[in-house]
Image (cartoon, rainbow, N blue to C red):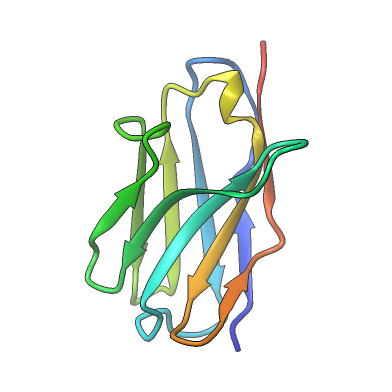
Length: 115
């Protein structure tokens, strides 16, 4: 079991940046991957980025080159640096911990990109 708490969401203008953080209640190294997903109104939850226990990253095509995921195993945190934001990035962003049997989710943090 692990609790995940996201922070850092908010309102930002197009072209701006935000940094999301996810704090885990226990060590994250044992999870095969940590990830960020998002869900926009009326749409399904979609992958944004994953980062493995060794630091390998995978990004969706829609955020590649703009978003950067990283993790700090010593602090049990993962982050998502989001640059060049567009209104299409507006969504609730969820932190995910992928175990070998179970997935764990945070409560989400709202990101709104609007002028």
